[in-house]
Image 1 (spheres, rainbow over the protein chains, first blue to last red):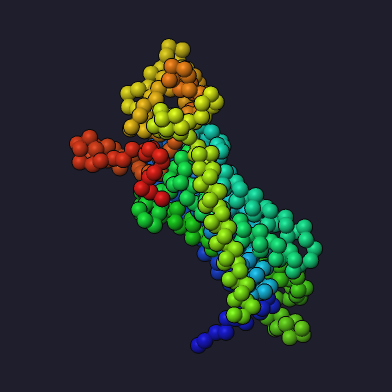
Image 2 (image 1 turned 30 degrees about the horizontal axis):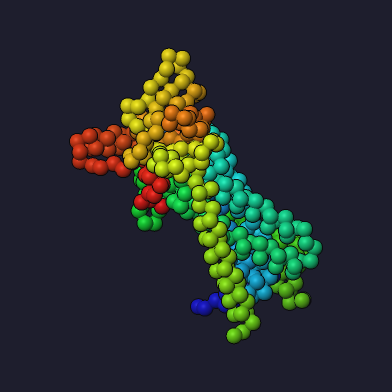
Length: 251
Length: 160
C-alpha cells in the first residue's frame, strides 16, 4: 500500500495526522523518562571521582544534545521552507524554537548546578559554555524576530534566514572542547572512540535522550497544530476529521 | 534549473560561504578562544605578559604543600613537558587532587611563580564506578596498562 505522503504537506491535512500521532509519542516519552530517571538515580553506580553529583548528566547531556539537534532541524525546516515555499515547513521551524530554547536553558542551568561542586564555579567563559549561551540567544532572536514582523510571509522568511545563518554555531559548540582548551571536559560518548562511561550510566543516558526526542516530537506537533489553527482559523473546537475535511474542501 | 532548485542552490552556496568565513574568523581569533594556557606555552612566552590569564594542566603528584595558615597552598602544574609552580590562597574545589586536571587564574610573578587568585578543577570525560577505578589503578600499578594523562598538551585529545 502506497501512501501519498506529499498530501500531508498541506497544513490542514497535516492537522488531523499530527493529532493522531501526539498521544503515542507523549506516552512513550513519559514512560521512557520514568525508566531513564529511575536507572539514572537508582541503578547506575556512583562515579569514582564526583560521587553522586555526576547524576546531573542524565538530564544535562541529553538536554544539550537536543538543544543542538533541534537547532539543526529548525534550520533544515527553514531551508526547506525557503526552497519550496512550503508554509508547513515554516510552521515546523516556528514550532521547534521554543522547545529548543527550553532544552538550551535546561542544559545551561544543570551545567551551572554541576559546575559549582565540581569545578568550583557556577559559570566560566570558556568556549563550550559561551557558545551554548549564544545558542540560547539565537533561539530567543529567532522567536523575537518572528513576533516583531506582522506580515506572516516576511516573518517566515526573515526568521528562516536568521536560523540558517546561526547554524554555523552548532559545530562550534560541538567541537569547541576539541579545538580549544576549555574547562568543560571532552565528550564521553563519541562515534569514533566509543564511550568512556560505565555501561549502565550510558544506558540510562541514552534512554533519557530517546525520551527527550519523543517528548520534543509530541510537543512540537502539538504546537504546530496550534500554529495551523492560528494562521488558518481552523474549526479547532471540533476534532472530528470529517469536519476538518469539510473545512479543507471549503477553501 | 527549476526556480526551487535555484533557491536551494542559493541557500547551499550561502551556507558554504558563511562556513568558510566562520572558519577564517575562528582561526584569526584562535589565541583569544583558549580558556587557559599550558605550562609549555607560558615558558615559551605565548602567554600574555603583565596581565591576568589562566593556566591549565595536571597537578603534579606529590607537589601539593599546605602552609601552616591552612589556606595558602603551593603546587606544580605540569603538562608532562614543562612544570610551573603555583601559589594560591583560598579554598580549593572538592575535586582538586594531585594527578588530576586543574585551571588557575592569576598572574605570573617575577620569580616565575604563578600567583593564582582562583583555582578550578578540570574534570575529565571518564565516568566509572569506584570499583572499576580501583581495578584500573591496580592494573596501572602493575604496569599492565598505560593510563593517559588527563590534560594533554595543547588540549589535543584522541577523544571527541
